[in-house]
Image (cartoon, rainbow, N blue to C red; front, side, top):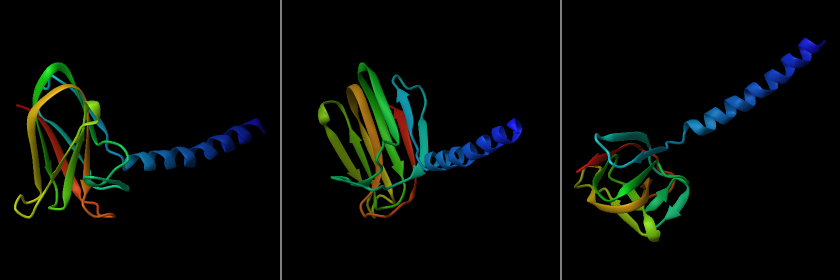
Length: 141
């Protein structure tokens, strides 16, 4: 009888574990810290349910970059559709929005010298409910 009870308890946990894994499978999240010696690439689907000044973004960043030195020269690139956006939030509540256009062919590029702190990157969409595959690259300059 103990064996049947143990087996039934394990089978109950399998669907719960599977559901949790499938829920997390849609989320893309990566962290990187400077100095960066080579390109960091993240792939996922753009857009989300959170309305922002930069379109509709996911509830969590797709990439977090921690600048550990006083300044770091970095370039952020997104390749997606011409309706995609890139929202970068950083220290002190500052944010920057870049949008792809028909002329850019779905490419977004933001280059700069970034001060020490943590930056969150969100790949969004101008329109609610739109999801497009994207490739986000973080490159040292």
